[in-house]
Length: 262
Ligand SMILES: Nc1nc2c(ncn2[C@@H]2O[C@H](COP(=O)(O)OP(=O)(O)OP(=O)(O)O)[C@@H](O)[C@H]2O)c(=O)[nH]1
Ligand SMILES: [Mg+2]
Image (cartoon, rainbow, N blue to C red):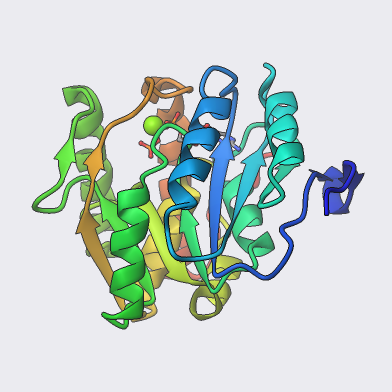
């Protein structure tokens, strides 16, 4: 049944309610994506109709200044399996975390609107169902992957990985890749994460490794539909700040930096 937009906690505007508890929840943070959001969601819904599982899609928006929210809400109005929420200022990590906490599926998949990689869904679900894994990262750096991003972005991923290895004992090859996990097995870790923005994803992966969850990485073929919505260099100060915070929190149990006002 379709609903009209309604306000829930924290000024969240939600539209749509999937009819029954789905097997898989796909969470997609979005920010200023008016150019591709409608076509990406249409394409994703078409592809998912061929898969043998029930699903919901949560579009987790915050801070867009373009037509993203209106387009997403119109899409949700036509697709009961799509929900949209919209909160506050731009903050990828905050949107993703809230989307995960709102998810109802047995499995949660974290995707990006410029990827919508159903191949990854298939492979990750197989790893969890048949391989017994609780957490799967779609890595753009592990053997077998194909990372088609420009050299400077590939280098940035390597530098971030190196810093995370030294600072917090990261054991993998990618923290910003696609992710899939068993919701119940991971909820405590998701709730424990305190760093937001770009580094929420890194904190989630690092905490998963340190908690000895059953995790694995699988290669992805990374083909973005457009360049990133926020330029890499603009993200660097926040990333560095949050690496310092993450190190303090994970190694020494406290946040060494004052919180930025929201
Ligand atoms: N809600 C929300 N979504 C965001 C924000 N910034 C980026 N996104 C979304 O996050 C996804 C990935 O963003 P991109 O701009 O492609 O960034 P990227 O450099 O490819 O990301 P990584 O390399 O994976 O870190 C897209 O679906 C974006 O719309 C934000 O501030 N808030
Ligand atoms: Mg991208």
